Image (tube, rainbow, N blue to C red; front, side, top):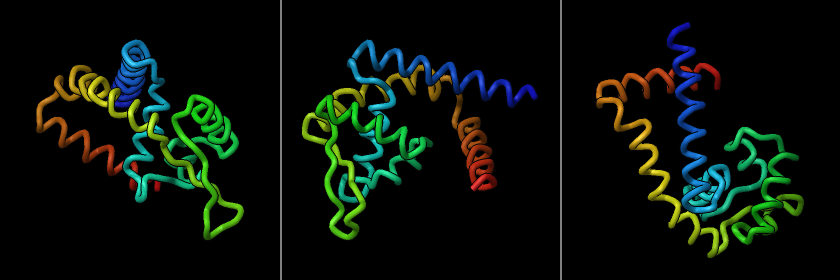
Length: 139
């Protein structure tokens, strides 16, 4: 239980801190940064709505509302899927890419300051291995 509570507390606290810093320093919500990160890492720089929903662990209706707000902010756009008339892709706009690039150093600094800089390489390897095992089990 000590490990479980420590994991929950640390994860929640770090994510809250990263989100607060991101918003204060860049004006970009951490969740929007996360969407832009997934899009940047995706093949072709775009994801289908259901792929984005799975990545964010949100329902399809929730991701639709989420993308609506980001689209209103000019950070993403929807495009039709040529292989599936019902499908829709989400991709970052030039403004979205610019905002992501300017926010990345803030995010990476926060990860270093509030997580990576507090553990050594051996501890990082153990944490990574344990979390990967949990994820595989649940997949």
